Length: 421
Ligand code: UD1
Image (cartoon, rainbow, N blue to C red; front, side, top):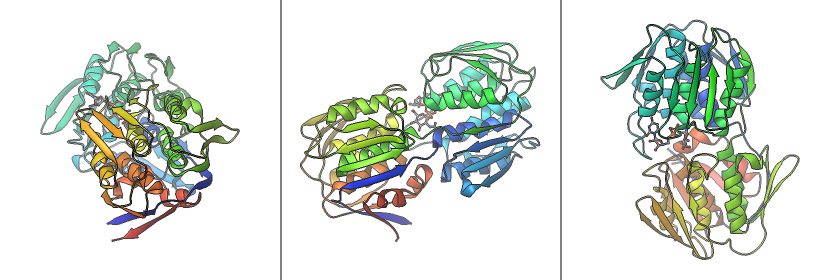
């Protein structure tokens, strides 16, 4: 298993290109199931999660081709010959459940394994099931698999979600594009990845309004056609690399970044004393002198502060002047990076969904263990400013969501290398 070794203490300077969004791509890919014609995605990120979704779609009978080293993906679902999403693939990645809505809409039936336990919380699927049942699907849980059918086809409905779940909104949105009549999703998730999915579905011929707000209205159509669509910029990768100069010092321009993707996050950076400027090429971030100030953060659905940036933000706040409080409201078990940061000298207390971070002057390098995707990158970020070497093990988590992380960080002057244990 590989480790990443970070030698701290170097100021950063230069440009980092930001990839297409993993989470957008993972919902755009299953959208191909809705049409017999090919869907081409450009600006796709090169990540193991994308390979897993490709494998899942191929197991259902879809064809996949990639060009430009994986940045262009063409998916074709003209010949779907299997309606079972197997546990062996689904257990690797929760986003596999995004094939459920499209399969039901196109084939009228689907069998999808429940994803099972996940390190950061229980993550049930009740809201997905609730929405699809409102559209007329009959869904039963048998032997760990959801057996879903819509023998008379799906019918538009009014659906009010109890929580603005990203995945449930995506599954219901995709399914309702081919339902008969009008669907209204209330308390819909407003994430940029939902807007990107709606944009792509419109290019495929869907009739959708209101994406990006809490009420999405879909007018069902008989069929969707092929399309070509560029994947939106990854706002989580963007926020992660914005934190690199904020932690290590220096100035980095994140190419392709936009304030609108990370507004609430930028407000917190500003309060901490980090300078962020939108340029023609992206977002320029600088910390020129002094320690950052403590800030309080509460994770919320978009447009609030993203849970997927909480671990990385904590890495910065470990060396802030003063005490910061982080409230995690989306996932119940998302502070597994805290004990690892403590090994590096951070002073953090965790009580339930709240972490209190008492800023220390400096962190010290230590061997630490990655526990999930965002936690692993937070340890690398922390290592950038720590004294000495930080060795992050179990970095396979990182390959799920960050392409070329070593290359991107070394290109701006960090000392980071991947070693085989
Ligand atoms: C997506 C993102 C993930 C991000 C999360 C929140 C992808 C592939 N993943 O995950 O990176 O951290 O949004 O921004 O896009 N819930 C239920 N019942 C359900 C569905 C969800 O109770 O049926 C709960 C979950 O347990 C969790 C919360 O709602 O506590 C948020 O989940 P959701 O918004 O659905 O996140 P995902 O789509 O899984």
